[in-house]
Image 1 (tube, rainbow, N blue to C red):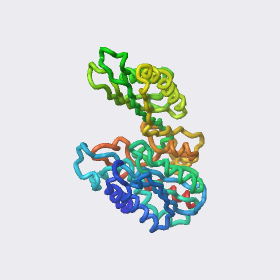
Image 2 (image 1 turned 180 degrees about the vertical axis):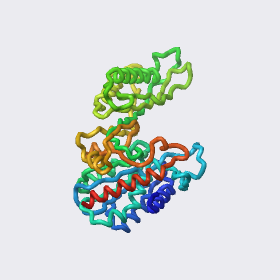
Image 3 (image 1 turned 45 degrees about the horizontal axis):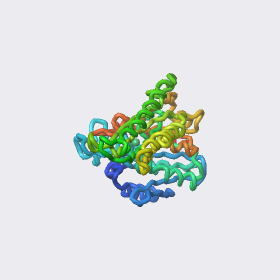
Image 4 (image 1 turned 120 degrees about the horizontal axis):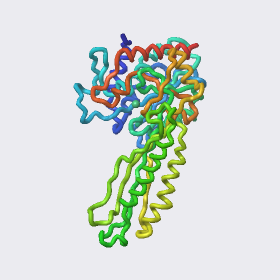
Length: 385
Ligand SMILES: [Zn+2]
């Protein structure tokens, strides 16, 4: 059995279509009104256009040492997926709640919201902060504003729990994800006179080869004791577009790739290596034939890795409250690495399974909701002790 407050809140949050491409303000307005009606202190941080916002709400004393329950308000699209019912209308059957975001990850936030009256039923000696971000699903681009606001304006919390779906297992590590796009502009020419042009596809080829060699080196140097799967930093060349015709020197080429670093990987060295090859080898070769040739590299998103902490406050507390001894690492990225990089002890721990995330007929089991409720009440007891 789950609490009516959890069910109602999950239904409300799922009902807001907060696919990342759209505004999340209707959800944030609703949540802020609700929290302020319970006396929470709320702060917002918005995107440049003002169309999306993070919300940071604090309950209890305005002091350091609190806990942050953090989640993203956005969800992935439903287009093209074979849903059996409206993804934005909560549906219950056979012990499961169906709807977009039930697993990833509105239920965690909704359960916390539903329990706010319980949180406040005892005088809190440590604050409980609720953090709602935007644009997690498009590369964790919203939460940095929230973290900056938090570190500047709130007394430092002791720990952060990112409630991504881990089936209520303690996850203390994951890889990062660094995304790159390169636009290569050379010079078109008739293919019989290649010396009059600068071939952007050939230039791309050198970048591709360099990254492939880097990937191979990381694989060869893998630490077989690493808990990660695979136990090394991976690279993927995901997109390439370029050229107009077989008999024209290719003027333009666009590449997109990512790499997923292990915690502790020297990501700056990897990025510097790529930039050096581009600046010292690939670009000069293009400019030899076309002085105006250019290569622009953009980084649309960066998800930092989450490193297991030695005796971290977050893991210690959640272990104590749940009695769990096991921890795990996962292959998906979360906002956790960004909180950790800001100096906050962080784990990933939440209800629902990642297996259902991003799928048609996404669901969470009532049993997982109940387990999360029980955990949050223990957390309240800690905050009130
Ligand atoms: Zn998620």
